Image (cartoon, rainbow, N blue to C red; front, side):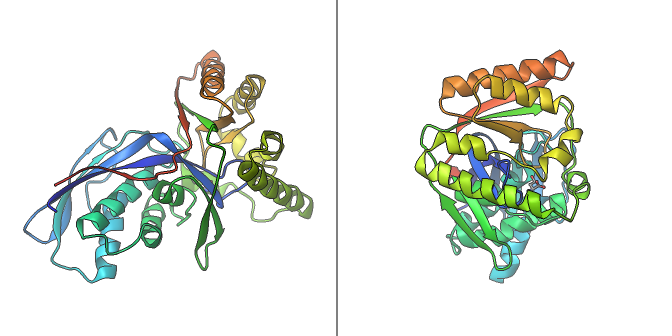
Length: 312
Ligand code: HSE
């Protein structure tokens, strides 16, 4: 294979109560990576589109190629040569798993080009190296669902233990990205290290409730469980109009609404596409009333993960 083009989806990490342990993939947006084989050894970045020139073209400093270098190192391959084109279809620092989608598309594309030496699940630790480079922490709740699709639980990081849970087929997600930037490293630094026993108990109840609600299609339970008493109250201050936008989503029929990943994007879950679209309009107009423009994405939960768009 001399050429491959792979799409990897955006993701919603945390899903309200599951900080660093829950995430799901959406149908759109997503990033696209192209790899073209070249005779000389070494990986270079030929072009990046859609990043407004903000991402490094140095292969050793960009998540999309760092993951490839880790995979080649692990496989003991030193004579592989390729040039890489990255198409960013979502803003950087958006809370939609932007760096994760690039890392996943990159590592899946390379693995396919090499004849698939590793399974998708085995690629996860390599994709996590991209998160370490981009966000300063090797969390898996964006790369995991982007790579494996669906709703993913990271039960443990050491050792890495992840599993998918089934979600209702008619569940829809509204993702709203306001035109403000939140740096993931900063959004992690403001969190407290200690959690009160009272809040831990509430959060554990919600985690258990959300899993059970999703697996059984109990929308009342999903809705009651989409409550985060630990992270959201701290991070909400980074998102202007957070409370108003959340209230607008809930009044429009959302099952729940919270911060997507580290923010500033917010997400809501709904039972139908029409409801999810109405919720998106309400959230967008609430941001707009405060002079903040935003982009709305409505999609189902993406169970497939990365998609090979072309190979030659
Ligand atoms: N779980 C991570 C966080 C995801 O909330 O910091 C970052 O997108």
